[in-house]
Image 1 (cartoon, one colour):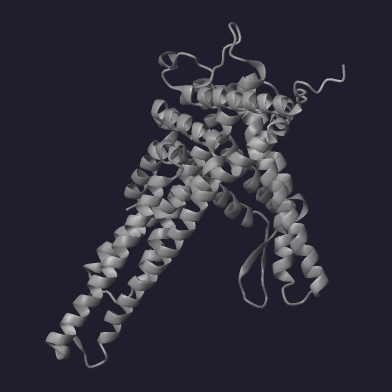
Image 2 (cartoon, one colour; image 1 turned 135 degrees about the vertical axis):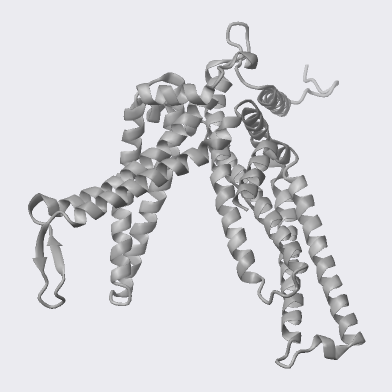
Length: 445
């Protein structure tokens, strides 16, 4: 089942540029089709149940009230169908309101789809990251167990068991080990971001795509290990410095639940929320700093400053891409979860001996969402790196001989359309600013 989810996620990654090109119209069509099928299943189920009751009511009923599972199944299908109908209506309204605001996002998603076609190994990054995190967590647990038996053995008089008491510098090793868990985990995730950024930068700034390296992913990994480990370590350490206070405040909040007054509870929640927002902002800035490092091969601080300036200069585009792009990626996750739930409903519909549908469907959908999130997060990183490359390309190049753009044709079309619209706006302003000519015969001469 997990393999099927992985294949489905890979398929969504490969075709997501087509979905975004039509402003998620295919996604809406899939959602509408799924809603129609759910209503058909509900009507078919009710008709089958009514025919069975009409033919022989005694065969359907059981001594303990066996009609209840059948009615529960029908009610469950009705709930699924109504929920799908409401979501389809909301999706249609969002499509109507957001259709004119996604020109650059469409172009970026087109190019991101081409990146995955030329660099299919990008889809394996979630597996590599998960494997690295799993190995590290196993190692961390083993070291924690060794630390637990490092102190001086003392017998507990109450229980009669031997306990190990940490003394001296050893009593601080547990905290040091806990900090290491957060830092190294963030370091591994940052290595994934740096690897993806290096491969995407290589793709973007290679004019002839047939001359790409044989393995851009491996080349990016080698550059990371040789030149940029310090950059990744510094970025992940900054995230650790923000995450540790937030975790401490969350622990204090849980320990004092029901004991603190309303003012203290509000202050704690406000501090936790502020630290969470700061962590998200630093994560986004770090990701762009890694992309700038891959482009210019500069240090972390210099890359973070350059990336920040580029983002400030393109603030409106950044806001549009983050809102619309995240929404389209969310639709991709919804598409995967919906297809999985739809397949589960079809499978359970022909297994009418089962009396409980909700719990298996929830577990399957949750697992499908986690797999989709892991894969589409790579797609999101690719889109963000492509936007930074596009912003730098338009800043230092203008398309004239000697300063040609590196961008793809889809982004080139967006730039040309933007220039034409700006030229039309300038002509309109000049016409409005031009004084009206005096009518003939009205001269005072």
